Length: 268
Ligand SMILES: [Zn+2]
Image (cartoon, protein in one colour):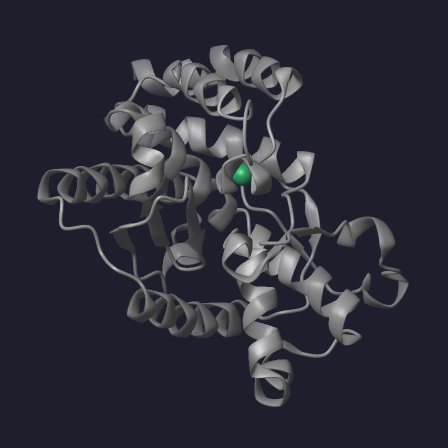
């Protein structure tokens, strides 16, 4: 399948949209947000449901239970973290789900409201619950940082002249679903991959490491996971997860730099 790379942030002129900003919880960064959270949650519910309908759930009971358990542990940590920050309201309308999808694709992603999908193809790279905690923590990091709305806003600006999400869905449902899949890392599904930016990756790494540490998983495991994933780059096509979450030595070094901060959450 042909995969197109799009550097939306670099090409779009956002002058007209700069008034429409939101703040990333935890990091405080200002971000572009043209889509109300309620719209994102409604669309997430719909698109996650549609995806599950077209997919096969894993019949491996043990791995399914492991994904579920790690997911719930991380969810509890996120809820505790937000409560401690006085931001429990942010999670009010979440409807968490953790599903293991039968697929050779090396991938995992999350949609708004805590809708997580892990593919069986990534299990040889995650290896055990520590590796799964790295992936699920990282994906939930993208969710709570609002990266999906940010990416969807950019894509709508570039592809549909800044049309509102609800209007885009009503007028061009298929194209809008493609943008949605692209925004959330299912690009391989529609042949259109958009890597997360370095900034978004760093935010998701930091949040994910904090969440996994609070859930009782040693964040040190993140280093080994990203190194194993990067090693998969050799040979044929890179794993889908690596196409949307690009990694290099610099990223791994930045994770190493975060260790003193995130280890504090692990030892508490
Ligand atoms: Zn990422």
